[in-house]
Length: 126
Image (cartoon, rainbow, N blue to C red; front, side, top):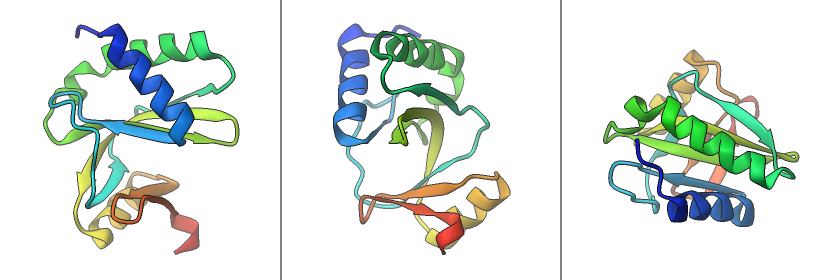
């Protein structure tokens, strides 16, 4: 997978500035107004938000290592900031809240992302 340096920089900046970022690497779509993002695959990595250069390398390595998953049209690269760390994973978009919640529980996830309301829903709070 070819990693465009401008796109990599955009991913890093949007994640740090906005507290998270999601992008479909096939279509480059990065605006989602419906459904819920759920990590289906045990691909998650985390890196300290304070290590900018390391962060770029981690994201680039993640993109290469997960290029097959990320080339699927229903998968997105998901990044979010939580307590001084940036988490990176492969997620899928599920329209139904109940289905998203059930998939997240099955996959031992802590949360799902609600694209309607632009917020994280922690499973232990529902």
